[in-house]
Image 1: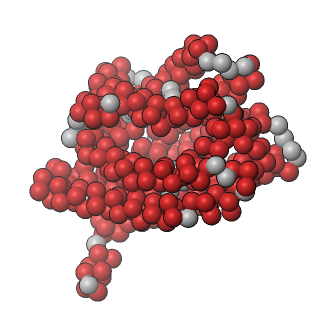
Image 2: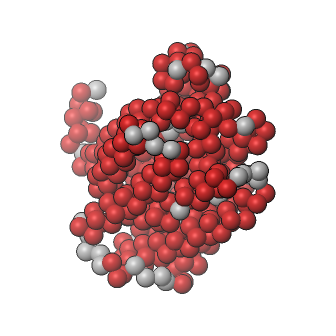
Length: 374
């Protein structure tokens, strides 16, 4: 056992991916801790009704957020790993596609709100939060660093954004700011993160900002591969977020607040499989070209790891759900405990689905993934 451990430590490839995953884990754990602390403070301050309205606005935007991403993330990472010489055209084209997708989301929302019972104030919250998707186009930088296995620079940008955002939210809480101020913080967060991404990208690559050009043929190729992921992403967004939209329409804002409080806890650990998948995905793609048997063996290890992580986290949450809700949110959110139990169990299957999605993309089986998701 000791000799195997020493061999792994001395293995250059293993340590490269281990360090990359460690950076991602460190940032996500910090984000989870700080996010839970500040997020719970916000929930307590706003109360179930206003927190429900805040969560509803975010969920309503999330229903259409997959259109803004265009399913490009995994596709672009895969192409960057396969052909490093296409970096400029891939990043530039993906960026402008995401910008167009973000404006498409705003147009769709302008139509969709007419089919709801929202008042003007609620719609204002929705459009402020939705505007953040424009600046999320800069996450093409994240794709580049994923392909290069250099996620520490993404971590730097995220930590800076988290620190500034947390200070702003705490300031709002101490000054008893209205609900709409917290919606503006969502937009502010995306702007700060975009600036951070751009800074570290330009500093750690020979990329010129003028190289962010749109290549029509590359765009067609990317969308040809990604359109099934767009549809499956929309389906995922619907069944992940439609619940809060429906609860608001049927039961009101307070019920959404109770439900959203449970969801915030149950989804807090989803970063673990996402961080592992994002870090190991380039390595999995490489093994496919080296040896198919070795690829399947490594991917099975990956699936087993995802399953046990989900099970290990879900069991204590189910057992101590009442205690967790009481300590974090207080007695006003007591109804959230039963929801938390069910969501924790469902999280195990979410983790497996994340791992399976990487498999489909590796073999360019986006259409099959779409049908499986639907």
